[in-house]
Amino acid sequence: MSFFTEFGRYLLMLKGMFSKPENGKMYWKEFMHQCSEIGIGSLGIVVIISIFMGAVSTLQTAYQLVSPFIPLSTIAQIVRDTVILEFSPTLVCIVLAGVVGSKIASELGNMRVSEQIDALEIMGINTKTYLILPKLLAAIVVIPMLVVISAVLGMWGGRLAGTMTGILSGAAFDKGLHQFFKPYNVFFALAKAYTFAFIISSIPAYYGYYVRGGALEIGRASTKSVVVSCVLVLFADYLLAALLL
Amino acid sequence: MIEVKNIKKGFSEKVVINDVSAVFETGKCNLIIGTSGSGKTVLMKCLVGLFEPDSGEIFYDGQPFSEMTEEHRKELRQRIGMLFQGSALFDSMTVEQNVMFPLDMFTKDTYAVKLKRVNEVLDRVNLKDANKKFPAEISGGMKKRVGIARAIVLNPKYLFCDEPNSGLDPQTSLLIDKLIKEITTEYNITTVVNTHDMNSVMEIGDNIIYMYQGLKEWEGSNKEIIFSKNKLLNEFIFASEFLQDAKDMRMLEMKGKIDNNRNMDDLLK
Image 1 (tube, rainbow over the protein chains, first blue to last red):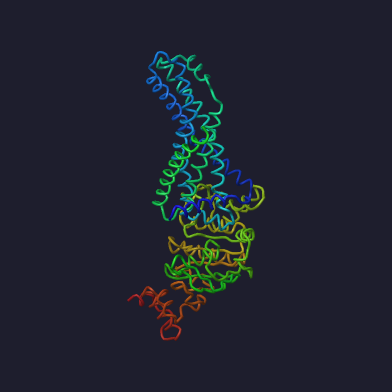
Image 2: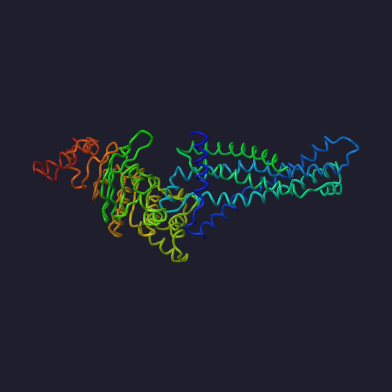
């Protein structure tokens, strides 16, 4: 299938999601369920990645800043900006593209192949609205929260590694965190988080929803959705940096 | 009543259904039979609106389906129940939640009222003590019965069954057939069954359509099918020599040439 056909079908899928829900209560229930699946389900991996990401950033920055003229608090400043600007939104979202994206694609793919989507259609339910929209909204609500948690944990991990290895004191690290802080960076990180959340939920939903075949095709769709999501996240990352910074 | 007029449906270059017309009557089990690839599943998917026909028209109680608005179609679909070949149960929900799902979505009843209705229909399909089980924990026959329960929980006017006996043993198949027949007459619904199971044909086929390569080749009832002179239909229903012999014997019985009480062992000799 050509790129334009796929892209057109993707846009039609997005358009098809916006219809009046048959029963608002059921949609709300599904939305909350997805928030819990995406948020709570990925919290563990986000916590682990963020702490180590911050810790490694501190050690590597200290390794490179060898000049005695640069104050040690600069390490914390660099770690802070790297974590907020790049690591937390981009790295966490790439990991989430694997965790959340593959789950969305395989769940919808399995529902398609086992005729569960057809069963919902025949009941008179708009399956795009019922199955895709809650996932997309949940991702848009929850993923920026995860990014904020990741940024905080990343800085905390950096502080922990810095003090434990004796590179710099806790006070020096805290001083560095406050130095030349630009609130705009947080806005930029959140803008990235919202964009990536949309990508890593809608692309797998598209591949899962339109899967044809059997178990093998579900696996292929899942893999393809993760690859395409990751590439699009990196592409959007560059685009946003070029536009907003 | 569902009426189909001159329906055509194709995919790419291949015509799958070619100018099929039929009437599916209310209170009767209407069967669509045919070999694999004859177009019966595509015809059923056109009937329920999963596929849009290339030409022709489908009328639900006189209302043309193609002229219905999206809202009207949604309303109509709430009056349609469908049993899928693989049951299509929601695998993350229990039996009870599966059957309750249409009630949750389309009614504002309290949980107690919905649960009462769920238990009623589960009782109707002879499924007890399976409420809390997941689809993966029950047998194929039970899944079909849950599928039927979910299909009838909103009191549909139309029931579609896609190969309800596939993958089931003969005894369970018979039970499912009887259940479909009973529900059809009890609720006075228009039932369309897609099958290639000859037991079902003989058991519940009030009105049968035989499809061959996308065309409606024959139409009649289960009483007429056995004596049909249609070559293609005979090739389909008497694919096994045993059945052909059984038919020959029945013909001889009818003509009084053999004893009605003849032992089946004689036939097998």
